[in-house]
Image (cartoon, rainbow, N blue to C red; front, side, top):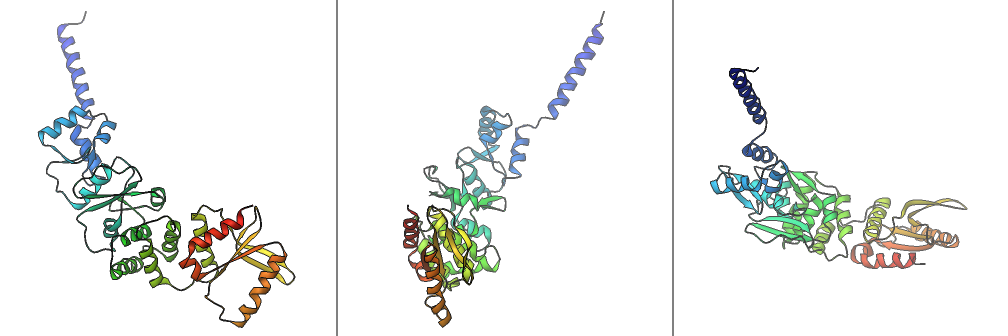
Length: 331
C-alpha cells in the first residue's frame, strides 16, 4: 500500500512536470513580441486569437496600459516608440480588408519621393473602405487585383508596384516637375523599366483612373518616341488584352510568293485579323512607302482583314484602336 510520503512525492513531481510544460507556452506578452518582430511592433486581436489568447486577456492588457490601441483591433506594446513604419503597419493590419501602402507613402518607401508623408496612403478594394481615422487616407480601387499582382514589400510593408505607385502619385501631384522627379528617380535607381511603365498605362486606359492623363504626359515627355518593331506591337497587345480582347499571336508568319511576312499581332478566329503596328509617324523612306501597300494587298488576298495602328493613334486615341479591333473580331 502506497505511503503518504510516496503520494506527496508523486503529487509534487506531477506539479513540477506541469510547470515545466507551462514554461514552454509563451505568455501573452511573448505572443505580442513574436508577432511584433515581423510587423514593426504591431499585433492584431485576430492574430492573438489565432494562438489561443482570449479577448478577455487582451482587454485586460489594454486596461492595464501594457497594450496601446493603434487602430481597430491593432495594438502596440507600451514603451515602443510610435514611428512612421509602426503607424503604417497598423494602418495596413487594421484595414480588415486586403490593403497596400500606395501613392506618395509608397513612393517614399521606394526612395523616389524624398518627403516623408504625414498622412499614410492605403489602397483597398472597392466597397471595402474602412472607417476614416486620423493620419490615414484610404483609397478604393476597382482594380485592386491588378495592383496586388505587381505589389512588393519595402521595409517589411506591403506596397503597390513602382509603376502603379507613380500612376497613383500623379493623381495628387499637380506639378509636372514633381511628377518627372518620380519617374527620373525610379529609373535612376533601376526600380522599373519602360515596358513596366507602359504596361501600367495600357492596363488602366479607359477605366477613369485618376491621374492617368498626367501619367501619360510624363511618360511621353521621357519616352515619347515610337519604339521599334516588336516592342511597339507588344504595347499595343497589352492595350488590347487589358480591354478584354483575346490574346493575339505575336509575329505570326504568313507565306507568300517571295517568302514570309510576320504579322505584328494576329487573330486567327473567328476571322483572320492582322493588326499592323506602324512605329513611325508617316513614312520616312521611299522603300517603306512602296512595300507597305504591297504587303497589305498580299495579306488581303490571302483572306486577312488588315488594321493599321500608328504611334500617334496609340497615344492619343487608344479607345478607337480598341473599338476597331473589337468590331473586326465580331462575327
